[in-house]
Amino acid sequence: MQSCPRTGREGDVLAVVSQSGPTVSFFDASTDRHLGSVDVPAEPHELCFDATRRLLWCSLTYHSGYYHANGGRRSDLAVLDPDTRRVVEIVDLGPEHGPHGLALDPVRDRLYVSVEGSDDRPGGVVVIDTATRRPLGRIDTDAPGPHWFAVDPAGRTGFATNKEAPFVSVVDLERGVLAAKAEVPGSEGLAVSADGSQVFVAGPYADFSATGARPAPGIRVLDVRTASVVDVLPTRDVVLPVHLTSTGRLLAGEVRTTADPGSRLGRPAPGRLTVFAAGTRERLGEVEVGLFPLTVTSSPDGRLAYVSCAVSSTVDVVDLETLERLAGLDVAKRGEAGAHGLAYLPRPA
Image (tube, rainbow, N blue to C red; front, side, top):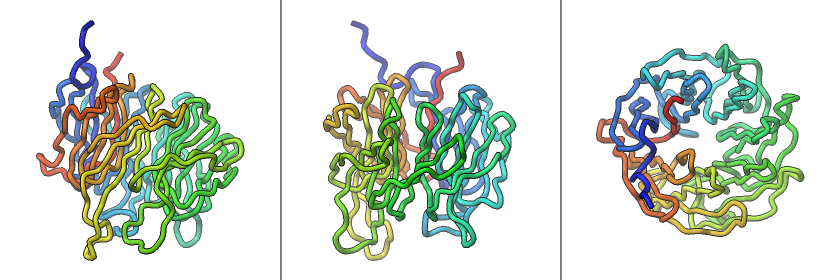
C-alpha cells in the first residue's frame, strides 16, 4: 500500500495569523515551506476561508494586547486574496468593535462575526453579505464578550461562547434573534456536531489569575434541542480551542501554566492536544504541542491537525491516526510573534 505524504496534499496552503506581526503567513501544506506573508493592521486574530470566492477573512480585534488587557478595540476586518497574497479590502464594522469569531454559511452567502459589547448595548453577532462584503445587521447575544462563534450545518442556528458569562448564546439566524441561553460555567472554544444536534464547548473560562475553587476543566456537551449540558468530557487542564474534524475526531487544545505573580496569563508550559471520538465521547489519546495552544484546525480529509501556539509562535502538525507530531512551523523565525488564527486552503479545483 502506498504510504501517505508526510504532511498535507500538494498544492494546498495553510494560512497562519501572527498577532504581533501583524501578518498572515502562508505555508505549503505538503512541504511546510514558507510561501510569503501579507502585512495587515494591528492584532489580527481569527481566519475564515470563503472557498466560493477564494477570499480569506481576518478579524482585527485590538490595537494592541488581548482580551481584558488591550490598548483599545478595533472595528474592522481584513479581506485577503490568498493566491496573490494581498489585502483586497478593509471592511469597517463601526460602531461595532472587538470582532473575533468568524463563521461562514456559504449557501446563503453569509459571514457571522462576533463583536464585543459596550456601555450602551451587549455583545452580538454581525451578519455580513459575502457577495457585497457589507454588514446586513446584528444579533444581540446578551453577553459582554462573545468570542468564538459557530454555525450548525443547516445554517439556521448559531452559537456564541461568552468567556466569563455563565451561558452560551444560542441564536436563531433565520429570525435574527437570541433563542436560548445554555448554562455553562464560562466558555471558550466550541464546535458543532455534523448533524447539528450537539455542541462541544470548552469550559470554564480561562482566567489564569483566578484563585480558589473552580469548576473542573473539560468539554461540555450541549444538547441543542434542550439547550442544556448532557455530558462533560474531562481534561486535565483548561481548554481554549475546540475543533471537530471531517472524520468525527474532537480536538481540544489544553493550556498548561504555572503560577507567575507578574503575569495575568501565568508562566506557560508545553500544551497538549487531546483527541476524543465525538460520536462515542471516548478519549483516544493526546500529544504534546507548543506553548499556549490557541487555535486548532485540520485538513479536509481529517488526517492532519494543525495547532497554533501563541507564546511559542509555532504551529504543530499532528498525524491524527498515530498521534505523532510530524512537523513544527516556526512562525517566530520571521519575527512574526503570536501565532493564532488558522485556515486550511485546498488548492483551486
